[in-house]
Image (cartoon, rainbow, N blue to C red; front, side, top):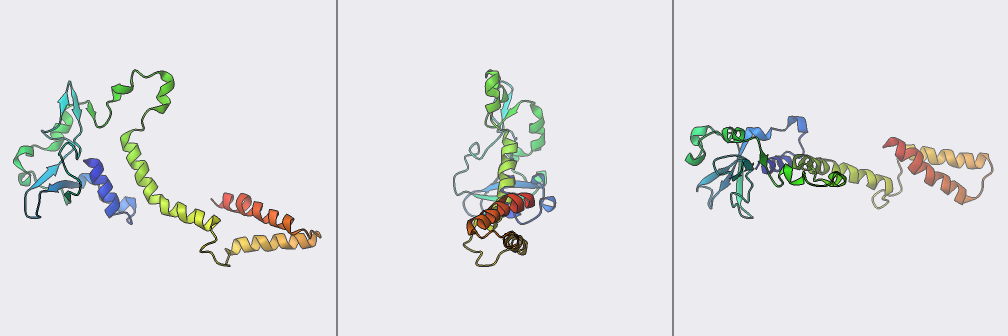
Length: 203
């Protein structure tokens, strides 16, 4: 459920600097049944409905609450406990602290029996995978724009950045100065310089 809140806030505040975004702990998320005026069920990582088996408590998910595709979910600032439905009146943090062994998709001990050589292929921790995807989404446009600027000629037209034009003019002058008339030599200079001496250093 925390991941749902985090991904929702990442989408809503995608144009806001990370340091100015609200924290997921400041929000509750509710599942709206039917029409907007009908019952709303609050969703939590931990409440009295968590599945517990031999000391392991499973973190609640949308599937646990049987939230269907296309359901209406509402993000709202934290509510007072008196406004929350009776079956979860006790603070969710109480349930979170009852057990030390919690699991989401994979129990940590499930991988304990693997051979040492297989440990390098162990699953990335879920929280870091979520952060990785969020960071990728934030940076993707800038990375795409960078490579489009470097390699694409579709939208560049005939104009080049002044720094590149200066380098190419310098290489043309050097070819004239040293009597190099083969255009392929000058073209090779420019090709190697553009990627290996200009863009690599700039990146």
